[in-house]
Amino acid sequence: MTVRNQESRAVFEGAVVLTRGSLVVHSDKMIVSFQPKNSDAAPTERKGPDQRESVQPASLGQPGHSGAAMSSRSVNRVEAIGEAHHVKIKYENGNATCQKAVYFSDGDKVVLTGDPVAWEKGARVSGKQITIYLAEERSVVEGGSHIRIEGEGQNGQ
Image (cartoon, rainbow, N blue to C red; front, top):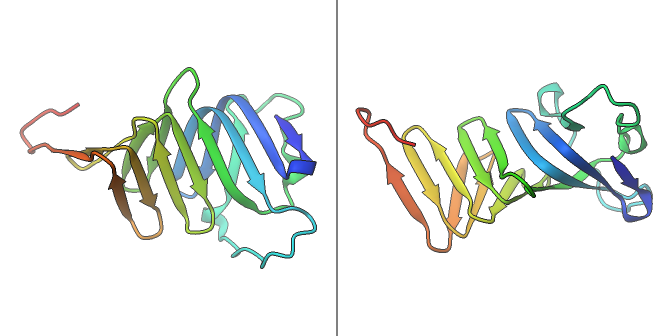
């Protein structure tokens, strides 16, 4: 992990996992942008115990990866980038893959780009960009959208 306090961000590389409530994102690299210490922005909404945001290297036992330098600052956004592998996302109502996912704490949404595909309960969608609104339990697919609906008797991939 590299913390860049002047830029108000931290960069995690390797097998990285973001957890926020039921949202789990796996990627090769994540860039976390957080509120500057002297920010005049309005305070962000406090989250309950099940709504905490956590970005960790997959190997938690490594020294120097505690994230203590930014623990008192609120996260604005998290950019997950799949370099060698796709970004893999699991959320309450489904799953998705893409090359790049950006989580925005303001609006509680995830924007997927780079061949995004999302699926849940027998339906699979793809397009140029997929926006998942977590709190509203809805998604918007933009640009060349395709949907595949599979019946109960079919074994879809």
